[in-house]
Length: 87
Image (cartoon, rainbow, N blue to C red; front, side, top):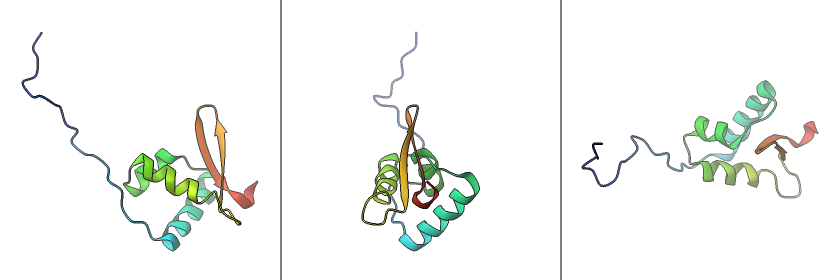
């Protein structure tokens, strides 16, 4: 068996957190949810080129407060986010 001479193998690309404008984010999210009905943190991560942690943090922040924009529900082992007014 041939072992790599590299000490660590690195990924070709690593996602990094990016700043998101709240107004543009909400308009994009409303359009996405109108078409698909729900969103997962992974879908958000891929769409906004951010880390999975940042995607979860952003979506969870939209679930809290006095007038939440989203509702989080667990489906099997995945959390899905839907509009708060939808259900």
